[in-house]
Image (cartoon, rainbow, N blue to C red; front, side):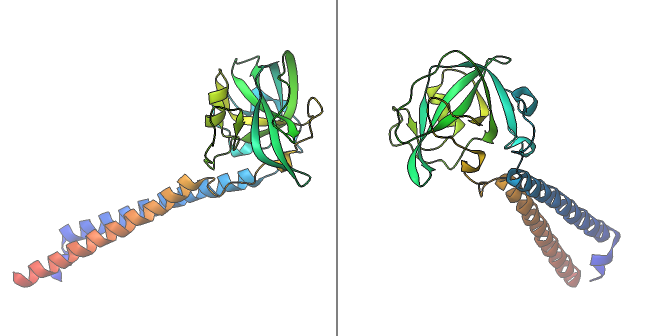
Length: 235
C-alpha cells in the first residue's frame, strides 16, 4: 500500500483527477449544446417580423435553432420545376405539398418553397420574378425510402433528396409560403413535422461518450493500483 502514496503514485492520482474533471466539463458542454438545440428547435418564432432571407441563413450555411420557424422574405425568380411531398394532411385529407424552387436574386442559389397543399400530384410550374414571404424550416431527415426516384414525388422534404430534382445549389432549409399559389390549400407553420427526436442527437452522444472515457480512465487507474500493490507485496 505504501507504493500507492509515493510521489510517483500521487502524480498518477492527480492525472486521474484531471482526466475525470476534463471529461465532466466536456460532457457538460456537449449536453448543454444538446439542450440548447432542442429548446431552440421547439421555440415558436412565427410571430416575429419577417426579415430578408439573407439575414436568417446563408446560401451555404446550416439553419440554426434561433432562426427555425422565423418569417423571411425571399426575392428572386421561380424555377419552372415542381416536386411533391407525399402523405401530407390537410383537414383530415391526405395529399401532397407542392414545392418549387426560387432562385434567390442575391446569391444565385435556390430556396425550396412549399407553395401549398393539393389532393393530387398535379400543379402548374411557375415562372417569373417573385417575392415570397413565409416561415423558414429545416429539411426533414427521417430517411424514408423513395419507392420511385424517377418521378417528382418524394417521401419527405429532405434537401439531399430534393437536390436531385433541382439543377442548382440548394439552401439547407425550405420556406413554407404564408400565401398559397394557384388555388392550392394553405400550409401553415404548424403543419410542418414536429421537432425530430434526433435533433442535437450527436451532441447528446458526445456528452455520454465523455463519461465512457472517464469510466475507462478509472478502470485503468484501478488496474494500475492493483499492480502496484501486488508489486509491493512481492518486493
